Image (cartoon, rainbow, N blue to C red; front, side):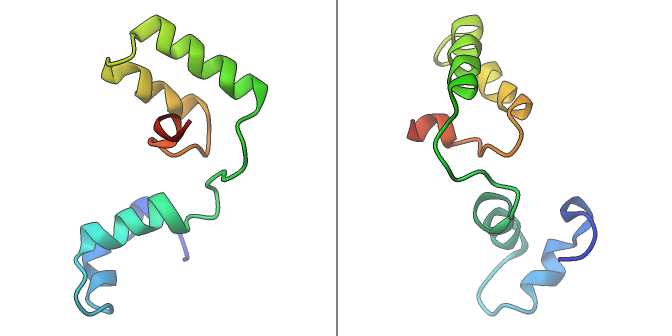
Length: 82
């Protein structure tokens, strides 16, 4: 994929794939195909940061998941799979 994934017109991509809509193409890229996704085990530093974010924001507060942006390359669902 050339350029930034944020600049991609996902609806245009979907026209090339029968039965798909732009949102499905975008989610497939960001959650499964992006080569920047870390798929290995969590490091001890990442574990510590996750526990700290959860302690600060609570288990059910949406704010602690936003903190995952600090842990580059992790999927938003990664802590749920922990």
